[in-house]
Length: 208
Image (cartoon, rainbow, N blue to C red; front, side, top):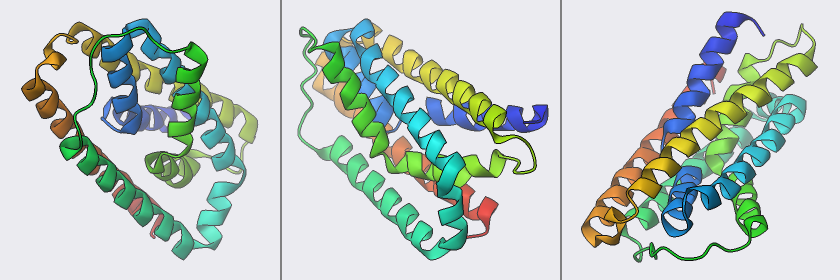
């Protein structure tokens, strides 16, 4: 992977890691409820799921997207519809229990992070639609995949640590219903915008 390609790739996934979405909401909520260190368990689970996505993207998803563009477009549209529904539930659903409590087993939190990210339609858009455009099929794929895994993991963890740190520091503020409602509504709006932008990027880069 050439340096300028890697820099562009890094900026894309760094921005993605800093944009509120299902993964950020999960880690933020865990940090408020259980504290910073407990919230790192689902964060690591999310990063582990990303490695699965990267493996799939490098081995087959791009081929499916190229050969079955209509099906891939349908997946993208379903993905953004799911994000819109999730954002609506985040903004206007029942209040989330944000009282500080003892965390459940770390393994359970880790598994929750893995499951959420594997089912996250934003991940399909980023890893299935955008990531393959950064691979050069004329070069050895293994170093490109390894570099991608390391870069995505660092970018993802950086964003999740930033949100977990802020949530832990503001845990008391989240006991205010008005503050919590405002935060989650802003996060919901950012989720919709980021999902729409990700779909737009895959449309413009792939021509579908």
